[in-house]
Image (tube, rainbow, N blue to C red; front, side, top):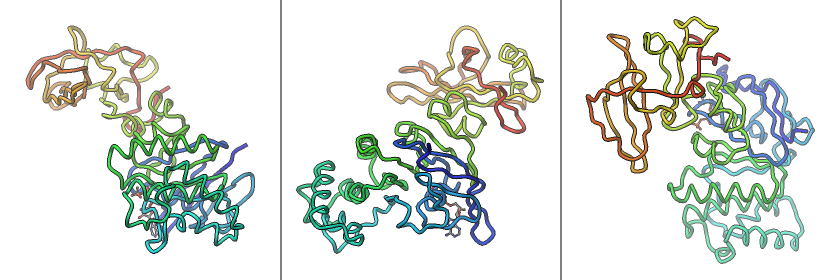
Length: 346
Ligand code: ATP
């Protein structure tokens, strides 16, 4: 049974639809990422689950209870915000315990939960400090501590790592995932960072303009994207998507058996293309050396019908602008999309 379930959830602000007919369910103990570009409705969806916004239509169930019209305190969820939302005048301990005091949890129980959370998060030596005396990562841990001591079965997180530097983000990603597994909580995690979603989540809800574009495991979104949007949003650098017709005769062997080549686009990931002696002709327009590998930008097609393809090659490419190359890849790595609708062709 699902721990959290949304059915047809819609939210409009002043007639503008921010969340449009969103349905998905989250299994107990799973971490689901809400992923998508800025403004696609991720935070609003999370706030609807938290009860901080009221939906215009649809239903929300948490632990099999209809909470669509319940207040935030009645939903059994804790929430960690991007801003951490710490009280500057309270100590770390007081910040962590704030919600429990409001809920009148007995004092002995409070200090017990505080000790366990502080030990878990490495905050034991910092309990008397004020937030201004902490680093960004430590402040983030305090915000996590507050969610942990609440001991709610569902934890909601809104871009909790976006204020941290790259190294700390990597560490905290692992820390949050580890904690979530150890505590067995169900987590819904908003991010616009596809790497964060891919590395942390059991499943990803990819959103676009208020709607669910695709819901699946990281593997499904990467390996069988349902649309060109998913194909290009998941994976870095994005999948190359090129109209088949543009490749002329050279593209024939990649054509799907069942569809008119004129309406089909090919999708190939940069890491799946080989540069070699055979395949599609192209001309190098740029080479970016990244250390472990290089990104080679290759122009394919002829005349006005040209497109660029990114190719990832290990180490140094040994190529320069203007070089002629040939691109090849395995048929099994070819994705087909309808050029007009952008939908995957089975
Ligand atoms: P970001 O990654 O930039 O935070 P998001 O995917 O979380 O974006 P939301 O914050 O959910 O997106 O916003 C979705 C849409 O709803 C946006 O167009 C936004 O302007 C609008 N919106 C959000 N909250 C409100 C509000 N309180 N009043 C009016 N419009 C709102």
